[in-house]
Image (cartoon, rainbow, N blue to C red; front, side, top):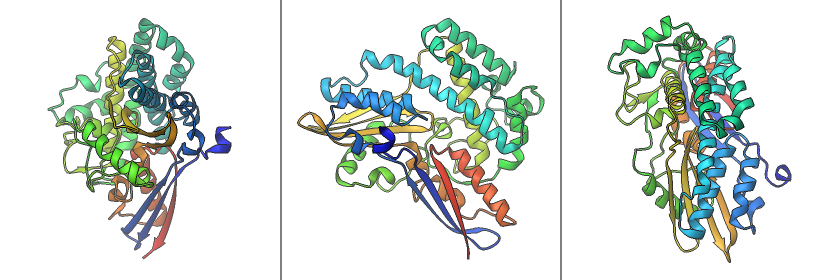
Length: 374
């Protein structure tokens, strides 16, 4: 039914003008399906059942957001006890996405032998991991050892620029081997100014988004705050003044594909560490409402996910989702910034560099590339 009512396949369209040596102009358009036609006229509680099935890639994040939105509009309580099991699902979903991207997608891109075992074991044991904390801790410990060995990056002195490089060069794990294969290919790819979402601004973001979503029917396709377009994802989350262990500041003026991949690796290690040591799933959950509408945001694998609803007579009149992909692949977002000035010795090399740049920004939909000669 969902596929008949809502086209679940979206896409990112990338158009570049190339002069044979560098990209002179770039246009990025993101079109992800919205659930409005499917949810219109329904009770809000239905959204938390329908949306996780509709958006399979990030279904648990969609469930958390929809459940929190329903609670906020009915009781004023943003984070009821019912959302707690979903938080654990969301944490495992984020781990799954990182394992999949690194062990399968990036391995394939690097021509490296895939290492699917961690994500396969997670998928097969997920329900047990959710129910048994000790089982989850054991799985996390085993996975950390397999991927990171004994010299895990989080335990390397972040103030020493050579520390990550030493681990990559000497660790005998598939993840370190993958990074050895990727480093030379990703450094400098898509390098551009870095504009992460500032920490502590969730309520400000939601209040502005609620106003814009009500008045602008296209806001969810090109979100901004006062003209600013922020980057979402692991690199943005780790940008609170910290350094990546290759010595470059995550919150510095530029970002490239290599640093984004390293940020994903560090976040994966932190998530596994939290599971191993029985620390609860956190995940920032924020909400805002007025008389007939409400909006919530939740941190998920790719960044901040927002759900907005407007109600009439207690039923859904309008429902829209702003996903991280719409920020990173905004017409003035991080994808376009990294494309402008991108150099390549030939069209095939250009296509490869664009592909790596897009992969590092991790859209939740496929992308299409069109190259025009200047």
